[in-house]
Length: 84
Image (cartoon, rainbow, N blue to C red; front, side, top):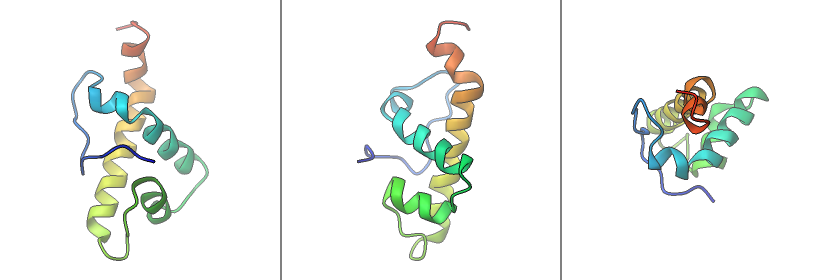
């Protein structure tokens, strides 16, 4: 089950409590993206959103969280490891 989520994750230059609560969500999004999964299916499975009923919101939630997940893998992990 995905923890309660915001439509757009906080964009802080540090890892937030929100990020910590959503590590699993971010991993699921990265896995889905790497496997070439359809964003609509990922939004439904990961966030429980109906992309047919709310296409703009579902796309925005999916894309903004995927971008944050990518930030975590490119930069944020350094903060977790104490490298920055």
